[in-house]
Amino acid sequence: SSEFFRDGVYDYAGEGVRRSPAEHADHLAGLIDAYPVVSIEDPMAEDDLDGWRELTGRVGDRCQLTGDDVFCTNETLVREGIRTGVGNSVLVKVNQIGTLTEALATVATAHEAGWTVVMSHRSGETEDTTIADLAVATGCGQIKTGSLSRSDRTAKYNRLIRIEEELGASARF
Image (cartoon, rainbow, N blue to C red; front, top):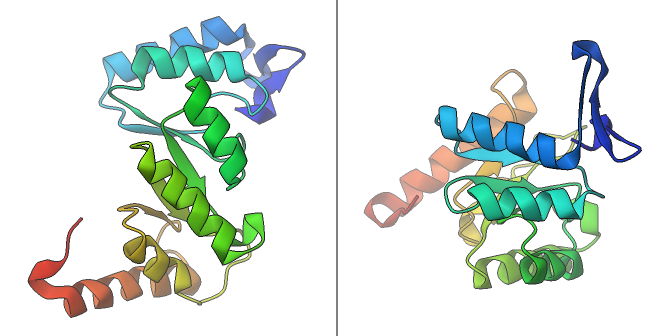
């Protein structure tokens, strides 16, 4: 949503629609109530923390509100989000924060608060499958790596299949 948030307003110029943060939260809550929406990534702009709190308070008990831009895989920002009621899930991109240690600390902090975590790829990915292993090892339960349209993405899904085969009956989703 950050791309549409200008001067305190969500501006959908292509649709001729402008919404205040409260109206944007109302709109998203209406969609969540009307349809079986279970997760939204970056539903509010990264600098609209009041909007995040509003939406989390309204639908956070029934919809995963995943912060990417608002948290940037940063444990300090996630701790603040937990404390202030901003979202209930974090998108983790290992190379966004800089070290594996920092990324794992972010995951642990989120899980300790009862939040969900989505392990994610970055644009310009290779066929390296490390994020599949990290998603399983950290108990994320979710991975964002895109559609099966390219070999770098297929490699990650294939790795998840191999991990499931290795774990057998002990695999948990």
